Image 1: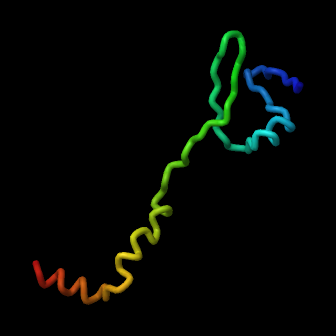
Image 2 (image 1 turned 90 degrees about the vertical axis):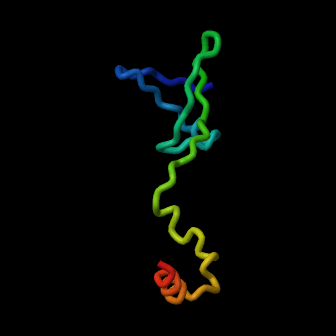
Image 3 (image 1 turned 135 degrees about the vertical axis):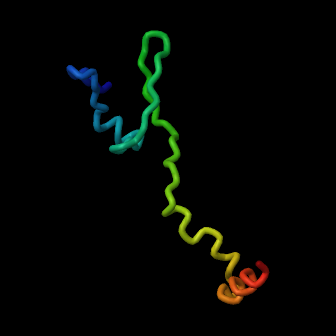
Length: 79
C-alpha cells in the first residue's frame, strides 16, 4: 500500500507505482468522488477538443477525380 500526504494547498501526489500501473501521465484528467468514507480517484475518459488543424485534409477524397479550376469556373458561370 502506498501512502501520500496532503499539502498545505490540499494537493496530493499520486505515488509513482500507482501512476505507472494505471498509466497516468502529466496533464491527464481524474474524476474524484466520495464513496462512503473513501475518496475515489479514477482516470477520466476525456476527449480532447478538436482544433481546425484536425480538419486539415478532411474530405479530400471528394475532389480526387475533379478538376478544381474547371469546377470553380462552372460554378461562377452559374451565378
